[in-house]
Amino acid sequence: MNDEIVGIDLGTTFSLAAYSRNGKTEVVRDSKGNCLIPSIISIHRDGNVFVGSEAKSRSLSDPTDTIFSIKRLIGRNLKDLERDLPYIPYQIKETVREDGRIILTVKIGDKDFTPEEVSAIILGEVKRLAGNPQKAVITVPAYFDDAQRQATRDAGKIAGLDVLRIINEPTAAALAYGLDRKRSGTIVVYDLGGGTFDCSVLSISDGVFKVLSTNGDTHLGGDDFDHAIMELIINDKLQSKSKLTPVSIAALKMEADKTKRILSSDQTAQFNLKELPFIGEKLIEITREEFEVKVAPLVERTIQCCKRALKDAGVKSTSVDEIVMVGGSSRIPLVRKMVQEFFNKKPLTSINPDEAIAIGAAVQGEILSGKRKNLLLLDVIPLSLGIETLGGAISKLIHRNTTIPAIATERFSTGVDNQTGIVFNIYQGERELAKDCKNLGKFILSGFPPMPAQMPQVDVSFIVDANGILTVSAREIRSGVEASVKVQPASGLSKDEIENIVLESIEHADEDFKQRMLIELRNKAGIDLNHARRIISNKDLKIKHEDMELIVNSMASLENSLKQNDPGTIKNILDKFQTILTPFASMAMDAAAKTYLANQKPEQLNDLGI
Ligand code: ADP
Ligand code: MG
Image: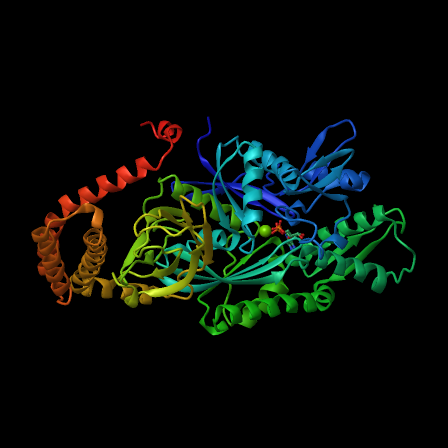
């Protein structure tokens, strides 16, 4: 059995797999040496399924039963796709299921397929070529939302893969170049693929990548460069006005793609019209210069996207440490030249740009397998996360350096009688008191029934997803009342800032510990004093005069001790107070139970097992 972890780049136009073994990476190739599998499937009327190059060649003869660019549909609904619809030639249908979930399907032949199923067929082919691994790391664009990531995960599951992680494409590209070994820095990943352009700004600190911003154009890529060549041939060179059939357009595009690739290495290329029935035998020469004049405005558009991404990340082009070029179209010399000019720095291009993302996914796979020990931790929570408790202390739910995704739940209660709501203040930091940590936001859980202090049971959950987004939710168990909030922790913190925060917490450890003890003791004392007040005002207990005096006196001395700032003294007095109060507290409990039972009907008592 193949128990290695495969890295998969599930691309819009091409998909591929790679492995990382003992730090050496290798992409998976077929018998002809090709590693790129076109992300295309085609289903013949007899039910035969074609995937990859076979499907691509059928797209000429059987365009309606051929599906490409399914990645544009995954995890989306029709409304999300408004902008894309004009570009999608196949039929898309939206169905609302009984449970309210909206399902998008595409029609191939007379069958409907979900984008997950189509992606699973592509993943199945990748998996087969990779020697049937069971576990995988799959990449997605950094801007993919939860639904798109989940749908990609589901596609993996349908293909029989255990998807260990979904990672961001730009992070994978940076990993392929080993940039995780840098102590700190800013990285731009420039990804110009077949139909899309993505620019991401990442920060790296101690092996942890963070996406600071993304920008791009979902309709700018290799296809547009092909169209530029087609235009050059038809309009400029042939000056043809005749209308082209869909089949001849598809044939022209394939030839344009060939010519474009040649122009990435040669100064001239022959556009071969021989196979194109509508023109007759002809070879037309195109120079790289002619091509560059046509496509310069397209490349300029990618530079504008980079500018916006930098602006959003708050990074100057001069302070970028590395530029990583990925995506097949980044091989075009003009693209490299214009990127280099803009950043005033030579971009990284040594790894094949169409293989870098799969290689990075494979590296992540090897890290997850634990076989790559010399690598630093990836994707960890840089600073602890918690909530403020009564009195201003912090209860940390997730501690720093926990790997993400992470989840933690803790139970809390109220401090005051008849409270019907709680305000949750969320903090990040290493210190013990809220005032010394960073507030990330707050939310209110309200509308649960009034109860004595300490009676409500509120479960607070912290979930940090793969993107570092924190969702905090709270639920009062008895009433089922719920509330939640989403926050982005640690945005914009540099490694040095994080280090300072940690150092400060060590420096102040003793003082913080004392403050925290004081808060906890005062909270406890507050609750016990309230309890005592209820006991002494309860006439039914018939407390003797001298006992009453004892309780009242010890209450007074406890109240007095709270005014001091010495945890030791408070603790001593609180202990004594609790010893005095205990027998009366049990008297009160017995009395309460009796009253309760006296008020119940017999059948209800049965329910209680009495
Ligand atoms: P995806 O969009 O799936 O991530 P890729 O990154 O593999 O796809 O990019 C595919 C695009 O790269 C195609 O449009 C292809 O024509 C283009 N491409 C591949 N090699 C070259 C090359 N040598 N010169 C120019 N374009 C290329
Ligand atoms: Mg890609």
